Amino acid sequence: MRIAHDRAPVMAIVLLGAAPLAFLPGGLYRFALPKLAVLAVGALVAAYAAPRGRLPRSVVTGAAVGCVLFVTAALAGAAPLAQLVGRWPRYEGVLGLVVYLSAVWAGARVLGPQSRPQDFGVAVRVAAGVAVILAAISVAELCGLRPLGGDVARPGALLGNATDQGIVGACLAANLVGPALRRQARLGRAVATLGLAAALVTVVASGSRAALLGGLIGLGVVGLAQPRAHRRRTLAGTCASAAALVALALVVPGTRSRVTGESPLAVTTITSRLEQWSATVSLVRDHLWLGVGPSGFVEAFPAYRPLSWTVTQNPAGVLDSPHNWVLQVLAAGGVALALCSVVLAAVVASAARASIVEAADGARREYLVGGAAGAVVVAVAGLTHFTSPGIVAVVAAPLGTLVAARHVRAPNPRPVIVFVRGGMALLVAVLGVACAAEIPLARGAAAAARGDVANAEHDFAVAEHLRPWDADVPLIAAQSFVPETAAGDKSAAQAAGRWSARALDRLPGSIEAGSIHVLALLGVGKPEAAADEASVLVVVSTTDPYLRLLYGLALARSGEPTRAIEELRLASQNPYLRELAQRALGVVMGSGK
Image 1 (tube, helix red, strand yellow):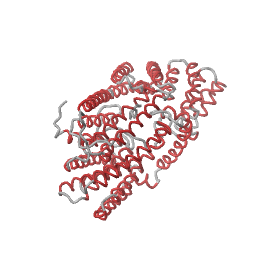
Image 2 (cartoon, one colour):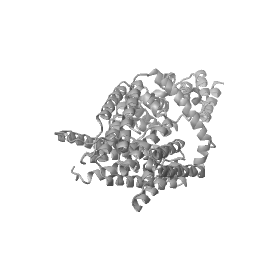
Image 3 (tube, rainbow, N blue to C red):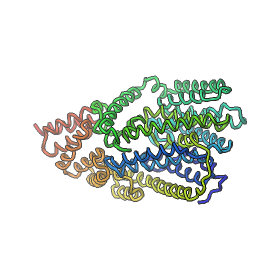
């Protein structure tokens, strides 16, 4: 791979900046892996650019220590290999971590202290273009259209999640408000202003209260971080942008109802968050030093589910994050990783402050201030949300620029950079194949939904060959056969049993895979085996109403009506399962008479 040194920086800036837009049409989950892949390609291209900055040794050391603790926590987890790689759909194990760190490194390399002013102009134009595209899709979805498909109430535009969409919009607003207010060429200001307006629209269209709050604070950071000579004008501009954001939020009905608490779902979300944070604190207390490992929360949390969730939450939902980045760090790596993160954050903040103070007034300083404000947006919004490739994609490269030091030519750097290029190329290849697996996964899920078990199994097998390291491919396959299994299709039940057994081999103790296996055993006429397996699962996850339903059905078919009635009554307390549980209760009690 040969890229001209003069073109490589611009290509890298474009790829890194446009990564939040990446998605895979026709994929099962179209949004996460493509963003990781584009970030990795951007970092690979940056490796061919003449270095214009570098990461300080203190930042590299802190990140290296954090990586060691991260890997240690993963290896100590319940499913070491799966947790080391990362779990579907965000893959925030070593796979995602390497991409994120590569993007930070690339930002320092192509937009460091020795960059040209025009390079920052490219970054601003890319950010404005991303904001306009996101806003166009966001407005279409707000109007009830679905240009990307899907039928959920808040689709999330090109991010796949509405809060992700809003956070990315808020970060883009923080990056663009400075250039929109700067005295520069008319065209440059017009592009930045258009991008700023589009970013604000994206935030409002998302309906995310976390993004709105983060966006307002981010705009405030930009206003206050300006040199004294320009602070009054910039503060006026950022205040006007903040006022426009609030006004738009109050005009759009769906967003207004969430902000003011008129929406019942908005109130329920707050209550649910408080309960899951309390439960996560208990989880962390029991795994204090190393946590449950990265991506281990999804399997560990069922044992800590709040009792109230038995009668309030949809049992079909699976929680894979505590929706708070502080608790997420504690759950993933315990106190050890949390302390390392605090120290690293202090080092980054110190380096960022020094960079902003030393930067001359102009495009570079605006980019640095916008990057700092974007990091603040993510930190604030992440207190009620989780991390994801889309969010990290919009802040990683600016963060690298923010902490970058001047590049010093090493005596013989070529072997190192050749190794880096080779490693990045391998990572890009792995991610490319991983993205390709989403297509057969989608085909397999569609075939399973129409009862075509043979073709579904073939497509899932193809996906498993493309992603042999991914423990979630068998779990996704097993999940896809659940509706037909529940409807009484024996061949689907057999397929669900095979794939859930594979998932359990790679994810020992998985409540989700175990539940599917219990259902499959019921579907193939083995109620005693299903009851035995369910009895183990309900001890781990005592508040799961779906498990209680399955256990009750298994007991009823095993000739134990008294115990079955007890379990089915517990399941019937959940509004989402009430009708099914009561119908089963009627059958059991009627046969007992």
